[in-house]
Image (tube, chains in turn brown, purple):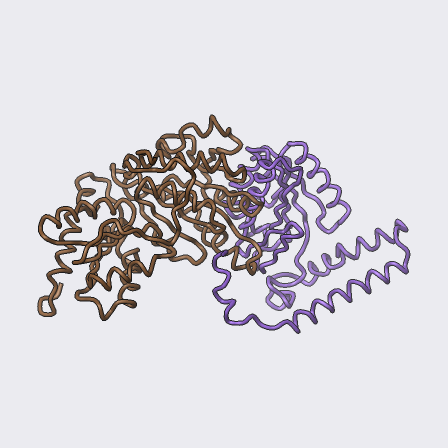
Length: 332
Length: 224
């Protein structure tokens, strides 16, 4: 019987179970033993598994990322933490030049079974260098998989799937998700990488969302339902590979699409998904696709500006109405 | 550029300067978690001493006393730049001191000295005493990527090149072995013959090997 766990507890359980089940697994990164960095996700791990497998590190993002890759090449399955996505810029060389390319460069001789777990630390006046959502950048790089679970169930299942995968996987979560509750089976299980989930069936428009934005979309869908608008909600779950069949099938059915992501607009997740959907469903589309995203601006420090910076259910409702009300005469 | 031989313990090489230095530290971390007595070795050039990740790696390896040896092949040039134009302090082995680990500078063209130094470093690593930085002074005969000598480009002098070519490490090893009467002349001839044959076979193999077919373009992006 599945129990109710928070998202943070689901991550904790996945780590516990994988460290227990597979002695190749270890956790490494800045702040892995500190609630300041990773919230409650690693509670109890250091006591159970010790400092040899729960390795808190100096502030050396690129070096420590290389260390994790090297350990993966030597037979381990590390989980590397970048506790703020912003810090990954320092580690871009090791992630993009090394982890992502290694299997290809050596003709498939060597894989890098590495999970890069990273946290979007949006809001709370954390500002431009501590709030960034960079999933689109990693989606761009061949050789990396990218997952963004929204529910506690998928937080656990996708983390286990990432650790078991023979490729580098960027596992992105969001601080705002950590207290979300949901059913999480006790046993060790995986959620498939590359598969999306229909969170709500609908016929009027398809709304695709990532990570925390799935909750804003669900809220919007409930409000729209009361107004007689029936949207289909798809949680992308994996950004790379994308669940192309699911997205395409849904948009063919509804003829209208809104894409909601918590990153920037230009070259963002919405841009890629939108292009893909148009390529595959052009003749089914009844209106242009609308993207809901962050504006192309750094995260502000002011809480007053944060309120307009981060899109919410209201923005999604207005995007859905745009695609529904669009006409050849009026435009969007 | 992309040399790898997992069966020989070489899990790859990188075209990014200092790129594999942290990987070797990671391999050492894996070995220590696995309880293995194996030792990891990072090979890199003097140019790596200009990269931040080099220092991050030295610090982490020494902090965790990992079984890794850092081997700097200092050939005095970083592409076209002489080392004096790159580093405020050209004594690379001294960087070790800042990270609380031993650093030694040796003649990188003396095979026996390298062997002895590496043996000591390996023993220390196996005893749990952590990493060693070895700076091996050597020289790059050819230009940055060859095939010429960079004399025509005015990047270095003929005198300097001659000095180092006379200090050829292989020729010196041969002289050492003959002096010590470790090997007879007949065996020397046989070794030369074997090496020539191996090179010739490799060249023939390379020339006769087909180009990859188009399917190979995307087949290794992910490990299935």
